[in-house]
Length: 57
Image 1 (cartoon, rainbow, N blue to C red):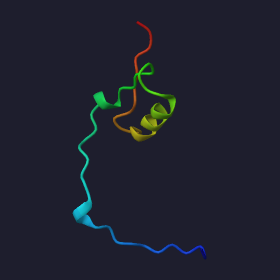
Image 2 (cartoon, rainbow, N blue to C red):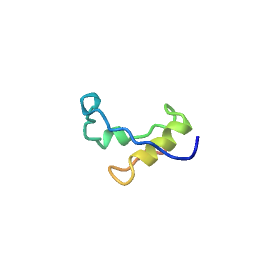
Image 3 (cartoon, rainbow, N blue to C red):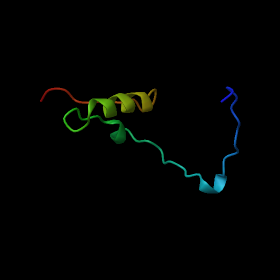
């Protein structure tokens, strides 16, 4: 390896489109999700729609 990066064009026929993320999908449940998954979700949902959870009763 000489430190150079060779680019490769993306094959658009293999690409998939993701749907819009909803506020409900950004809801985090600390009892169901592992810490690593919560960490990734907080980063993924920033700045919108914003990750959220409910605390207490």
